[in-house]
Image (cartoon, rainbow over the protein chains, first blue to last red):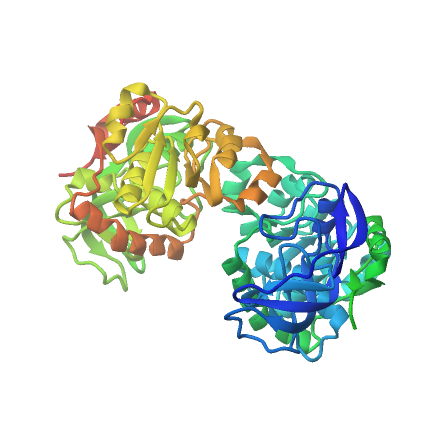
Length: 314
Length: 314
């Protein structure tokens, strides 16, 4: 099979041995696979694939068609449309995925959108609901609202009855992001727009002091992205007075059973939103597998709204 | 009635009007009332009593006898022995307390120990179980193990099946603290003794960087005390890799219903430990009400193991 390959901090498309489905696993003919910030970090050498995942084939999410099943795999049949997160190896013609990680693709979702759905919606759902325990009516601030996780978070929070504010650095994107259901503000002076019950941090540590200042009583800060910096001063007295919480997380290194739980949560809460089109997956551009390097360049250039997706098979 | 009085950063004992029990409240003849760090902070002008609490009478916990009940108060009868946390005003001959805040004193607990029980055990239980969600078998680090909350936390965690380590600065107290059920270590280099699933921070922000370093995967840091300093640098990348959580809290400003919930939790989980004597309340010294200033001086001097308690009525 052909696959996007990262070696010596270069992106290429190369031949690899076809993978085989092991116990409980499904062999998927990949139709689409979204790019994510973690792929860029892996390209820059900062985020090696966890043990057990393909080391040189990037890609954390895919949608495709089941074409074979390993021993004991019985959740799906050949020909079923599936999507899911993986620890690596999604940007390839074939991928093996444990069946408990996979979700059936709703009929209303086309393959390109399906391939751009799992990572950002899983990340956003896990952060907002599983970690922060966000409730209807709560005031959410999303830092980095124009990114993939940002637009996913805004939409599912809005659909779940939260009051959503988002910071977006590029003024040209403010109107488009507001259409996802958020009041959009510039990052500068964001704390004046608080207080917030939940703050989803997708930008980095420089926001931390103002995040604590903008936190409502019993507020929660969930840190998922730190591209703008990892360290900042924390005032614990302020956090005590807010009775606040700072939690930080990554999705990729989690064990199979935890990822399976996130898939079940998405099936229950987010797939109905996608099926009813109350939530949608913005796609900025698609590239064929052979154009992987251009796709990576586009992603690295920034300024886009929506996902970059590799379309691998029809 | 006579009461300890804090005015112009001085401790005295003065006459105050007798309080009267309002709706749902109980009038308690106070038998014993423990001193706590918050009383010292109030004396130093840093921690004013919340609205609705007596402003110039300190004291956050008491044990005594019910002598009258306001309209609708029916959980207790006159003569019942009760104890509980209050938002202020405990160090007095009489105090009014909402009946939902109060707990019946187990027969096995003498009045002096009862008056020294509610604050530290409520604080420790709330931090370890309600906030950190500590589970049996988890590895707990208590920073400041010789203090009132520290010894309470060590004991209930040990009784609940946790593996407890405690830092204690004074080497003379190591043996005594270890008898509560902890491996006792010096604060210097504590992170080498990790990892820890839960870290109870009773000392301050200077420990924060090493706390994050010593955290186990999915570990929780709960900050309750910051006497040694409020600010420190936080590395969010490290916290993300640990999938860790920092939460900070205070007990005193919480609304009635939340304090009532902590009382119910203590009745269920901690009173049986006290009744069976698997957990005990160390008392360092008792003082009569008239000796309140000496009691405060003793507390401020530090170096003690156990509570300082005012014995107000027999």
